[in-house]
Image (cartoon, rainbow, N blue to C red):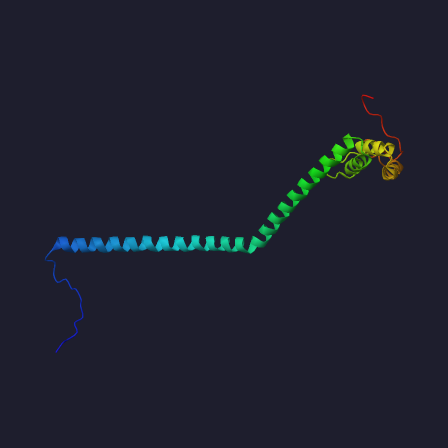
Length: 168
């Protein structure tokens, strides 16, 4: 017959004090290591939760990120196209072309691809009108009929008289 033995180590007496001391020291070290391991596991779980939450937030925001990147790309393409158009219109205007002069006048009037400057707009529109553009004549008439706008592009005071500028 085979009997099942339950294994238990029982130290009887204190025959080997060094062995007993070593076992106690090892038990204390094991307890200390188990506490450190528990602390490390807790810290790992906290950090893991923070990282997972951050990743989940970034994943949820991806459509917005992609939309912003697409918008930035489209805006860059629009700026590039506008820059090419401005360069073409300016080259035509430099040659005295009525359409190039008209477009540059409209661009300066609206701030389209160039800084808004009503004085330069009127200058280009006047040159375009002189070159035979009836559209430029109409646009120039509209600009000149606006009583609240000065030739410099600033606002005229309520009395309608523009203050003199220095250096005239």
